[in-house]
Length: 208
Image (cartoon, rainbow, N blue to C red; front, side):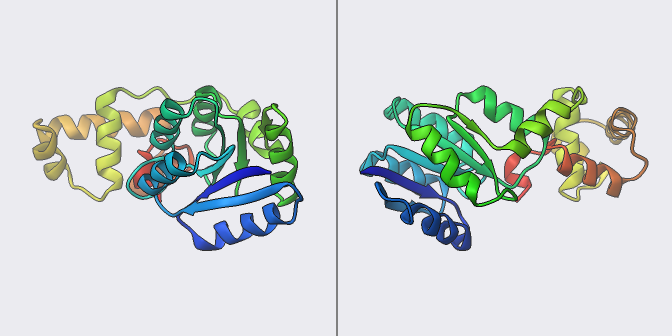
């Protein structure tokens, strides 16, 4: 029997995955986890053959769970299930060394097809995810400070609040704001937030 651990903070997603997995002979669900810390703990305890991992969960991000689990169990296979469609984030996951990448918007048949491939020793990327990464142009290049300012703007902070938080002047914050809008080719804060969320420019814990 192939032992599978499901990690996702949404119960309805876990139930859907469970239905698809238990319908296949030779696969069994050995456990579930609803947050990142629980995912790490359950992985160490249960030692599954495959972990299906949500990309963003409470208490520990998907990439943190992946890194910790692989440190303790380097041979475990990990497939990421994500609702993000940012080419940059998807490409980052592919570069991380995961065994599979599924989109939550994809067809359920991809799950069984992908798991079969992964358990057989192969790699699987959903068709939609592969297309998104292939069609993407170069991502906007932001400085570390611009990235900080962007996240604080999208969290609803004023220029004064951002200045106090980062230890810089309000005038400098305004310059960073203008630079962000120029680089991302947007003309309002709402457009800036929409673009940043869509393109995966926000820290993962701010996106869900």
